[in-house]
Amino acid sequence: MADSRTLPQPPPGTPTVLVIGGGASGNAVTILLRRAGIVVDLIEAKPDWNATTGSGITLQGNALRVLRELGVWKQVEARGYAFGSLGVTAPDGTVMFVAEDIQTGGEDLPATLGMQRPQLQQLLIDTVLASGADVRLGTTAGSLEQDADGVSVRFSDGSEGRYDLVIGADGLHSATRAEIGITDKPEPTGMAIWRIAAPRPESVTRTDLAYGGPAYIAGYCPTSENTIYAYLVEGCRDRASIDPATYADEMRRLAQSYGGVWPEITEHITDPKKVNYTRFDHLLVEDSWHRGRVVLIGDAAHCCPPTLAQGAAMSLEDALVLAELLTSRRDWDGELLQAYHDRRIPRVRTVVAASMQIGQWQLDGVRDADMPGLVGRTMNLLKERP
Image (cartoon, rainbow, N blue to C red):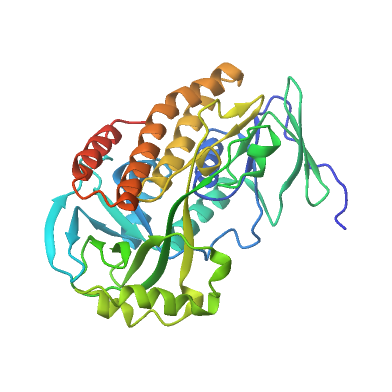
């Protein structure tokens, strides 16, 4: 049993923040607040800080813009794979058309960059540690007790802390969201995705998507000079009904129906432990994202299927906007936290709705949907700073 103890307190008058969750949004807001001299404690439930989880991630320009604010852009650029177009192919691999991506981060950043997700997480971890934040892994918040001046927190290890603000960045199934009485819960969209990291075929220099065949989408994204991550989107099945030992067999079965570079990719779908199967969920908390001095960011407040590759971008933007507001004045009251919600909700709502619409068109088999128009309108909106 952990000893009950009280954490050392900072000098009087120093703002104190607890960040619950060490994913993209939690790490980002920690870095930005520490840069402003705010005392930040970060707790993460996973003992490994999710440093080895995931295959790849597609980052649009508006996500890269935030990563530049965090001071990690040069490392991201060096380790990832930047490109500026999107190809659409037939299931046999025939390229139907190529569209230029919109540079949502501005003309001085690539339109899109693929990266190995563990490498991005490690860069953020290193930056959090360098910031001087106090980090505790394998730790959760057991209770949050608020009053007019702050939040008292009892942790899973028996320790206690007192904070001016608590930021819930603990993901889609956020315990913080439930703890403060927000009853919204994620709901499945009806789709699921198989993902795997693989060596990069020499001809793969952008994302290509194939619509049709046994999967709704068959796609891949280069994540470095040597790697890609490949994915297949199908109708959602009960995950409990699929033996994890068969994950490679299941993904390979779907992949074998696709041409182009897919046969080369399929050769590497052999280890079930390297295949990830996840259903698509969606969530949008329309009401305020705070209760008292506890506020939500990232997937704890909103999540959408990756049909626009904007999930991480929206979470990173949350961190940037909240940190900007918190560092603009000392009075962290309900008006400030409501301003954060009001600034974010129109943009996030648009992205969630567009992402859901694209998926629904596929589920419904709509062949004449104006997908290019919807994507173009949404991406042009995202060119504006959050």
